Image (cartoon, rainbow, N blue to C red; front, top):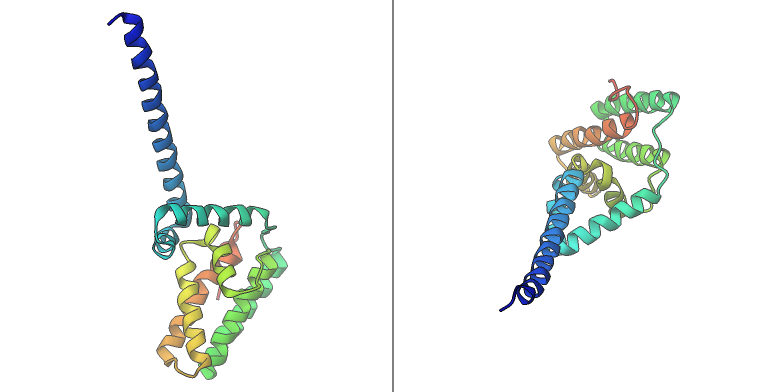
Length: 186
């Protein structure tokens, strides 16, 4: 075989191998970026979607939707107002734990709305929050489940206390996101 023939065979093969390597590297980079951004929500979505490809498509769609939202940090006055309201909800827990958990849910939803997150339904809230708050999302999920139990009068006082702790984790993150003030003080 002549050198020209060998080169005509080797160059296209090398180009195909290089393109495959590039595609694999880009997929791995995208997967790593999604894992870092979504945290535990990445694995949860893979499990729910039935595979990585479907999950990554879903997570990318969430990112695109989130990019179209007008998420804003709170003004200092609003942040202080929410922090005071949270203290009131915590104080309410002593005498009326079920009401306090419902009020904590309402307050978190109100805070989400004021920050610019749509609040049209729990599942959509979860998807929208997952983009920036994937690491605290499990707190919201557990708190919401306990809130649902309490509505049916099936939650124990210890579960209600746990719900308050879980709501607080997301509340603090939403309250302080985008500023230097830090979490709510109570």
